[in-house]
Length: 182
Image (cartoon, rainbow, N blue to C red; front, side, top):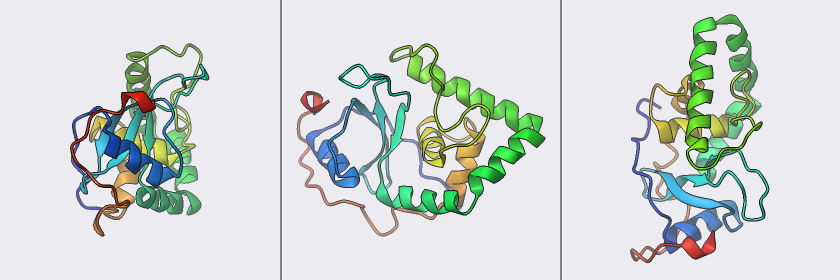
């Protein structure tokens, strides 16, 4: 994609956002804290989750990509060996490795600002390998360009997943927050 989607403000989830999440993933959200990024179509595409699920289970994936179209396109990249190639480059390019380690530190700092999960990794394989492009793209969408170099690269490889319109059909009425569904 020539130009990635713009950053959006973090917002409290509305009832319509929760309904969109349910339709996108086929299940209710767990540990939902916020809508961390909105797709250009207006629906959530990245949610911020609590470092611990309501039952206390650690959940280190702070940024979770929810858009099924984006997820499918990323799955294609993963199936085509992009993660392996990126991991190999980390071992060959000290500048890339340093930038990726900084992305890891950014991710941890953002999670720790919510709750510290001592001894848990960041996500997506950071800082030493690429294990999940979905997490790296989600981090890039939330943090903006220049924070996660491999997330930025993966994002640039994606089509404009929103071009056909919203991935889900949810009635929006500007309803109240959805704190009770977390």
